[in-house]
Amino acid sequence: MKLKDIELKNISKFRAEHMGLAMIFIVLFHVSLPRSDAFFGLRRMGNIGVDIFMFLSGIGLWYSWVKSQAHNSGFIRKWCKFYWRRLQRVYPAWIVIASLYYIPRFLKYDTHTAAQWVDLFGDILINWGFWQHDELTFWYVPAIMMLYVIAPPYMEMIRRCGVYRWMVILPLMWCIITQYVTPVHQAVGHIEIFWSRVPIFLLGINIAESIRSGQRIDGKAIWMILLLFAVSLSACLWLEQMRHGRFPLFLERMLYIPLTVTLLLLLTRMLEHTPRWFNAAMIWIGGISLEVYLIHSEFVLKPLSRLHLGYWPTFFITIAIAFPAAFLLQKILKKIM
Image 1 (cartoon, rainbow, N blue to C red):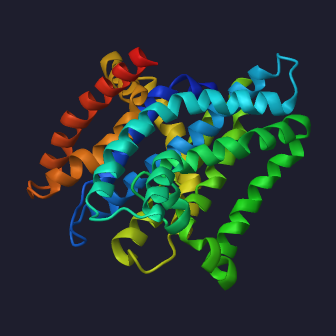
Image 2: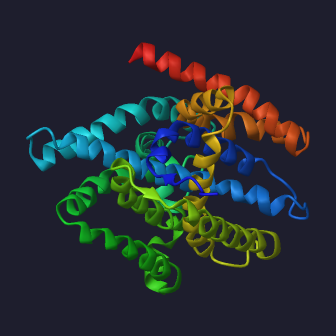
Image 3: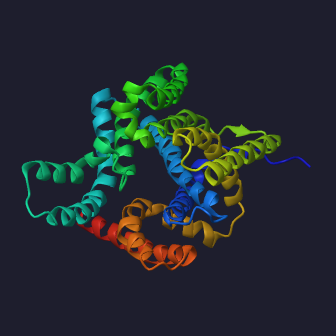
């Protein structure tokens, strides 16, 4: 029996569903679990939800950039308009949640120095605590906003000359340098979580044209995809379950690259056959994923964790509170904006 070809365009077709699933993976990852638990390694794999978002973001940005070529404006103008559109999507929710988080913390101080005021505004406007000392509370927001800055020059280069797609090798090399070259590590090694996600983001941009043009992978390749998925997943599970905390995390994130791509290909095939209600639910979650990310950990999960309800009750209560709250926040901001 001939196996059906894998249509790359379906990665884009099911983009919202993928984002919904990725958000669920991230919530699963953030719920704490004892190291001794047999599920610990698999729970840690929820971290891959971030890589899925990065990969899909790269694909989406390429679509937008190619579409913008229909306008005859200069590169700088297109770059600014491109960034402004993304700022409009991310910033309103970010400003609200960042203010709700950082202002109460600021008010707890007995005195308020000029430096503390600068820190407050810096954290609310650009989350500069992440860039300064790896504050991970909302790290994805400053990271993706920085990638939105560097994406247009990269996309314009590969649009004009496809050979520049090989530049994806550079951030792989940079991850090794930031970990093991001491002066570089001391200067910028604290934001490893950012550097190690740049390759999968650029890879999303690189593969986007193949998706947009409707290229296919021969159905026989499913066995290679399954093998690559199984090997990369097994390696990650072993590292997390057996050697957690005893290896540089960027090494595992390099394994996330083949794991992310193969997982998305397999999920795409799965989503072709899932019930409509399931796809609709994932689309809904994907549509509020930014707001869920901003709300669920600090405002829902942390207070719940103090009750020691156990892993699954904590997870389900978190989504029962965070998802409607995220939906409400999005609706309010849309009406205001």
